[in-house]
Image 1 (cartoon, chains in turn blue, brown, green):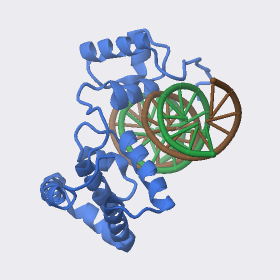
Image 2 (cartoon, rainbow, N blue to C red):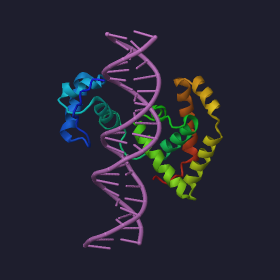
Image 3 (tube, rainbow, N blue to C red):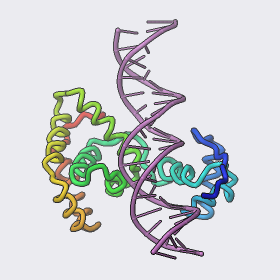
Image 4 (cartoon, rainbow, N blue to C red):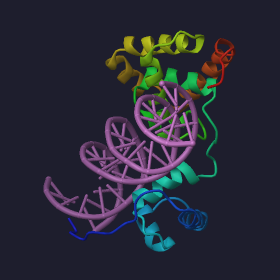
Length: 171
DNA sequence: AAATACTTCAACCGCCGCAAC
DNA sequence: GGTTGCGGCGGTTGAAGTATT
């Protein structure tokens, strides 16, 4: 314990703070977040800087709502991996773990309220799949599947869902 | 038009694993 | 081998926005 109480800024980021952080990362690259505060002139701790960059400022982030195809991918991967949001996010370029986590929670709320349209029927089916999936099996699968395998799975899944959920109404 | 309920999502918190010392 | 600091992760919160009454 250092015992030193830092008075880091908290709460929503201002435009100026964003600008400073983006500039810093553009010049120095990602990483070494704990030193970003002093280097970039921000009164934010490293975690806060990293989070802001990863979840909001990264240039490769995809804006806009989750597509039906992405939703199907999320549901299926959640059935495989459980709440491993960062793992799921790696299969959805431009989407963050935070975004997926929030989306899942929203979806789950809707689900629990009960609905009968086509899209929710598919969601329910996929959720049932998840419940049947034993933890040991999931563990074994985790050990077996490498990144290349995942890519294959994702390609197949996307093709499959294009056909299955093509009639989805966007949320 | 105002009050209230509900939803969304950015950001924080606490924990864990890992690397450096 | 123990300690410390950092990055990353998942769970949670609460402010702001939106819908409903």
